[in-house]
Length: 330
Length: 151
Image 1 (cartoon, helix red, strand yellow):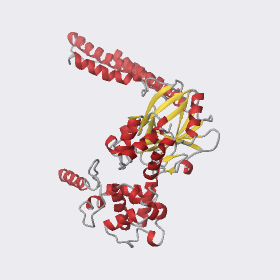
Image 2 (cartoon, rainbow over the protein chains, first blue to last red; image 1 turned 90 degrees about the vertical axis):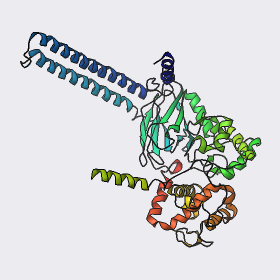
Image 3 (cartoon, helix red, strand yellow; image 1 turned 135 degrees about the horizontal axis):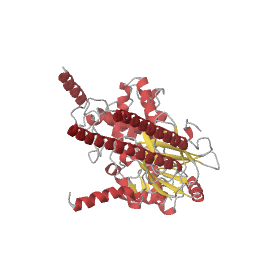
Image 4 (cartoon, rainbow over the protein chains, first blue to last red; image 1 turned 135 degrees about the vertical axis):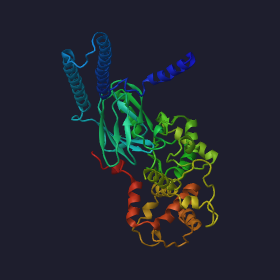
């Protein structure tokens, strides 16, 4: 392998170090417990591996030495008998350490179960995420999609359901993965500690666009989070310049997409009330931008083949108006 | 014997290859069907994927609100009685142009109308129980205010 391909391989490997989607950079209590368990397993299993290799090498050298001196291999060997018992004891001790470690990690994952926590419902669809927050003031649910905000230092209880097939909710920096199973409600507690942007990903193959079923996770200070949630709870405001876009949307898009505060009530697709405040489009397929929105409206099947969003033939002026309208929904 | 069984299994698998074939891109129809002899009809009416897409839009666009399974009269779709004819082009026309102010012909893209037509014409071929199952599948899990999980 020449030096250029080595450098390329090194760069590819380093690309995994950015840390926005990595269980090796834990940023929450649950991920921390799993991270500790991971290193415990690496150390114990690595130690056992080294012992086995050392024993093998020792045995080979011993046979070679014995062959030189004696031709009798059948006589019982007291030292070897003792060695088998020592090896068995080491194996039992190693397994006991792993079992205790796994038990303690499990306890840490469920430590917050008895406490009250903020409720968030996450429903998996092919291929996007519906996310609903319990409004702390009233008794309603504030809906958004494909972007999860979490307050640092507080526990959030995520309830997981699926609308079609089995998906899996995985934000490796914050917690382990848990499946979203049709007909079941799974619960996962998240207690993030470090603020920043992270990436979540569906971790159970769920169809052609499984890879484009991601979501952004933002861990922020509780005050920032409360302000964000209050903003998401407000109805959309339509600037006067976007009236045409709103009209085209009501005519062509509102059967499937809802925008609170307008006559768009559709629930088949993601809620778009504050779409422009999100970081990406179509579950991590494109970064959020005016051009991205317009491209997505024009050719969703080209950008994400198989997506449930059909191509809606709009005139260029209408598509432009809709994209402008959506880009204003902060 | 095992080899024969393997070959038979392989052939049996191949039989299902084309009935869900789907196309992505510019092959979709841009115009309504030109009469019941339109050559494009077969690729919708006898393609399970296209029919099931029609079922999806049937629920999403709110068709099932009025065209429920137990409704009597002209709104009952599975009874095989078509007021304006049961041919593909006729049913297409009924969906697109005969819904008054709903004017689906203007609001629903052409390809979705093709898929809806295929689905509607497929309904009489199934038992009520099968249609009920299809509807449950389309509805999926209750979300939002209709949520039925732990509170």
